[in-house]
Image (cartoon, rainbow, N blue to C red; front, side, top):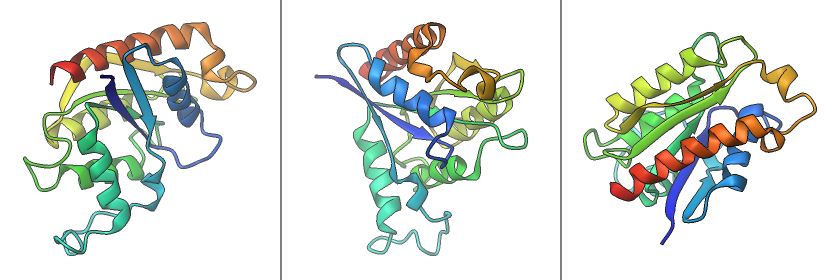
Length: 184
């Protein structure tokens, strides 16, 4: 049975380099590992406890929770917006953290990766995503990191799956996440 890793991307842009990084993870997943990209994050409304009521949870939020619950581990792929993670990714973490302590993310192994235009590859956003996921109850793999700088130039004509350095590093991340996911 394959280890199921669900990838959540913090960028909504179709041509996003972070989406391409997640697509690369899907393509290069080692044998015994199934990486799936969750496409419904764009439809999840902002978290509001008034609408998080049994029987009336918005369909997109319920779908997100179910997808996270079915996964053995999560791969968060985030760009950096103004020094932090995008609201859409934080919102997804908020939805899967509820009910607190028993949400779909509770105890779930999580790794955070990403790429950004700046020289540090979005490390601030990744640190914030790790922090939010950890507070939400995930088992964050703090030592599993991949920050790829210079995305606009590096991936201008090259998809991340065609970049040997990126695929080698990303494969190592997926392997560590799969190992944690199979043990969870």
